[in-house]
Structures are given as C-alpha cells and as structure tokens.
Length: 180
Image (cartoon, rainbow, N blue to C red; front, side, top):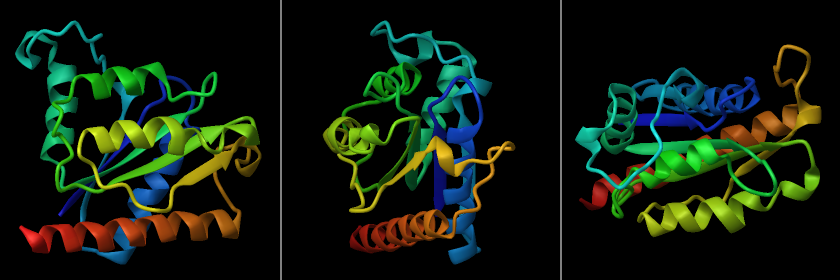
C-alpha cells in the first residue's frame, strides 16, 4: 500500500512537517507501507482552466497522477481566512469526481487561531467526500503554539493524536482494500 501526503502550503514548513509526522507514524505502524510527501511549494501546479490534464505542465501532471495512483492520502493545509489554502483547492480542482473512491483521505490543518479547528470538518471534509473519499473520524488541528523555532513538535498529546490518525487511516484502508 502507498500513502501519499499532500502539504497544501506554498510558504513555511509547519504544514509539511505535520504531514511528514503522519507519514512517519504510519510507516512505524506498518513498515511495508510506501510513503511519499508532495509539498506543493516544491511544484508549479498550474491554475485550473478546465482543459484536460495533458494540457498542463509536467509538475501538474506528476502531482495529479501521484495522487490518483495512491492507495490512500493525507491532506494538510494551513488555514487562511477560515478556509483551506488556495493552492490545495486548486490542486483538488484538477481531480476527477471519483478520484478518491475506495481511498481513505485523512485531514491535517494548521493555524494561528484556535477558532479555526473546525475548518477541516466544514470545508475540507465535504470536498473529500464529494470526490468519494472515506474520511476518518479523527483529524488533527495543530495550533502554531505547538511548534518550536525549528517547527518541530514535542507535545506528547499531539503526537498521540497524530499516531491515532495514522492508525485509523491504515485500519480503514486495509478494510476497504479487502472489500475489492
């Protein structure tokens, strides 16, 4: 099985570090798992125009195809103006309507205000389920205060929440895969 993590931030490293933590936790649970991090700041994903995927640049095609070929995914986004990042929404707009059929799609969000902890539930989750994704019950919101100067996390409770998300994602994806 392959788990792909997507960091939907074009600046900084907090979101990508949290997505990486989920990938590492999943790998520690199942060492046979393949993982890959797609950090959107490392790619030039073109703005959606409605054209077929083959009309876009190599980065856009690579990122979309990596997502489509994954067995399951974890999406990370900073919260800007009570919403997911525009970069992540633009990427998602490139995907077909059944892109996540039979795939678990976990959610990670980061933000500077604790008021944003429900953005994943009210904004990202409907998008993922519209694309036929199975969304775990748990998701992880990380407030800026949990990061040190190097954007590392030392909070034991946050690490437990990350591990629980990884466990739930693996459990659900294993169950989905056994049905087909």
